[in-house]
Length: 393
Image 1 (spheres, rainbow, N blue to C red):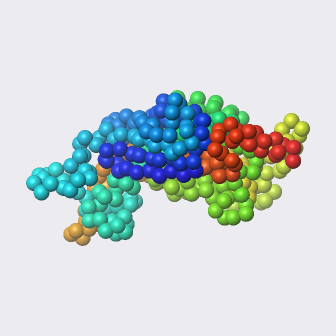
Image 2: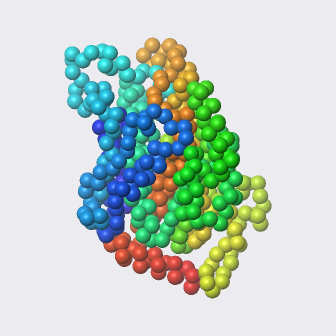
Image 3: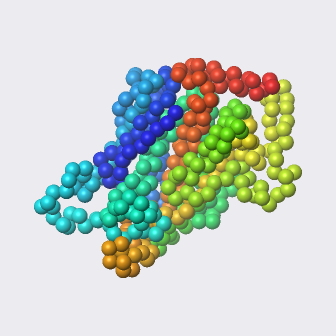
């Protein structure tokens, strides 16, 4: 199972084509739009979210609410395109264009962005050619793709949820949701402005975000993703590129501005003896094999253990600042303040939604790779058989 995305931040639309979905999978634009709206929310979002109302069009691969087994094409239109038709158009630039209409040409790269290195790599003197595609706007269709993946996981009895655990050093008390299901946690975070599970911490996060915005600065944080209901044995230990934790880590780090990832207790494992790290194996007739703890985050040897997958990603502060840092003009080589594009003071809550969906995709793709998956009923039967096999082993 694979997908490609296409589109620029201020281009006419964002497009994705998904290949490899089983037939007979229920898909609806309404559910995808629900997730797209969540991505646009969260305290700290900027003016772009007031311009765009992201909705998806299903262009192919779905008939009467179910997949056909053929490629699924999804499109999200950029409402702001109408203001950028000349600047971002595919046609050759007219010779008589008013120079003032091209005032957004960029020669001053922003520290922390892809601007300078992308310009060097692809030979672009107008760095808008870089920032338009490297923009986090592309994650819109990645959320749409992940929403389709979640529809598949839901059919297989697998649930996924994400939430914010830290912003600007303010840590949420995640023990408040200990023992709660993914669905119960979702109910809590969707009522919270920072998409976190701790109201007291959330109030402090809001204050920190507002303070950063007032100062023209930005702040980052940490998000956590939990996946429940997976059978043991998804992934493999036999090759480096089949290890599921490796795939999940790559997916998390592929999100714009993410710079770190950990599973279970993560880096804390380096500070503990092995006796306080590894998860003891238990067995009973009702549940089969379980673990006393879940320090390894539901993964051993590149495979699922049957325990919930728990992983976290670190998002750096967004590098576009309204109090910009120094940079160098690539034409004059003089020092200037970096260019300013519309941006967020904090996008950690929104990034938690993106994380949920890129991880959902990788989990779904790993399942599709491992099982016969032409039709959804066949796939469901195999997953049920996998659960049974693990329990009776």
